[in-house]
Amino acid sequence: MLPALYDFWLNAYERGDAWAVTCRFLNLFQYITFRAACAGLLAFILSLVIGPRVIRKLISLKVGQPIRTAEEVHKLAELHGGKIGTPTMGGVLILGTVLVATLICARPLNPFVAVCACTMAACGLLGLCDDYKKVKEKKSDGISSRRKLLWQLIIALIAAAFIYYKPEISGIGASPEQIAAGDVGFSLGKNNPIGIGSICFPLFKTSLIDLGLLVIPFFTLIIIGCSNAVNLTDGLDGLATGCTISAALSYALLAYLAGHYFMAVEYLVIPHNLYVGELAVFLMSLAGACFGFLWFNCHPAKVFMGDTGSLAIGGALGTAAICTKQELLLVIIGGIFVMEAMSVILQVGSFKLRKKRIFKMSPIHHHFELLGWHESQVIVRFWILSIMLSLFGLAILKIA
Image (cartoon, rainbow, N blue to C red; front, side):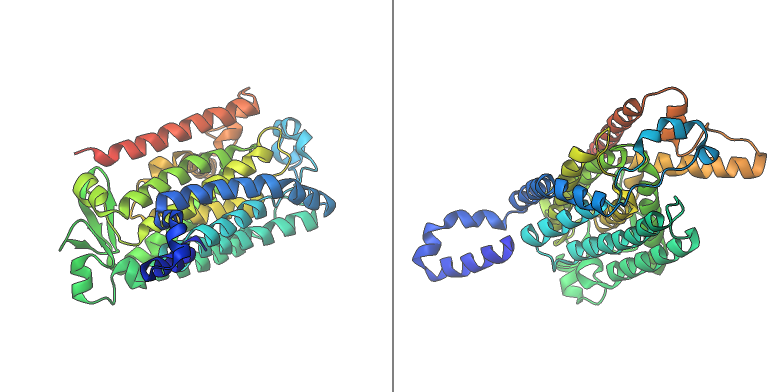
């Protein structure tokens, strides 16, 4: 809406219309920085305004979060017993406010914005079905793991194929002149295009490897992995929400930098794409929505995001990492999500191979709870780690 309003104003201003001369402040709407700030603020305000109504509606629908029994989690059931009845599916609040803020403040037909928003919506819908099944059957199982993974695979494959074949993103199908000029695809400078299959990392100012067509399954793995990692992190009040904020803000900055030639190519030497800067507006709306949701989700939580929110957020962050050509940097910036996922993998692998557990319980945030840390201590300390990892990930952009 704001970009369309700017385009309308610009045409009128160039014709010399009196109202356009008076309303020269509309020139602000061309700037990504202004619209990104508006998107974050709008998503935050919408969350605060709509949040109480959404929570009341969820309570009236009796969609309380099923809590695992003492037979399943032993001592943890005592620690989380007070959470019984807290409404879940709160992720609809995040998803709704992000999409509304994006439609108003961004250019929704921008390919980077479109693929991230659609992936987020599709993963959110899958999570909503999972949450609904849990609530309906009053169990913590939900959709079977195989069926959920199958749908995640379909969503991720579609997103990966779109990224690979969309000329504005990959350069595939564009004319040699467009590619050389940097009008489409990614580059490390004029006449230095890099393929969409190139894997980059800020410490190395050249492509590490070009996977070619194999990058599609690689992208698919990133989206599925990030979606499930955020889902595993969402086990304590506000934990996943707070970690999402630092990751979303980091990638918003990365998207903005990657979209500006001088900062990307001349100064930082990171992959540049003419259209990717617009993605910063979407990511700022995600950060703003999470700030607003955290208002109700902080300990003690009045609402849980459920798989509706966690799968959607993970899908969005994974896709954003791909779109900025900073897939490997997600391991650092999203370090908490990686740590949570790895703790589960190591725990399961160790138990199957050695019949011994590495942690008292996985994901790892429960391990610290069982060590005696209060829930709020675990949450805040993990937030601190997430912020430090994000800062470190951004700091290495300028090394060398």
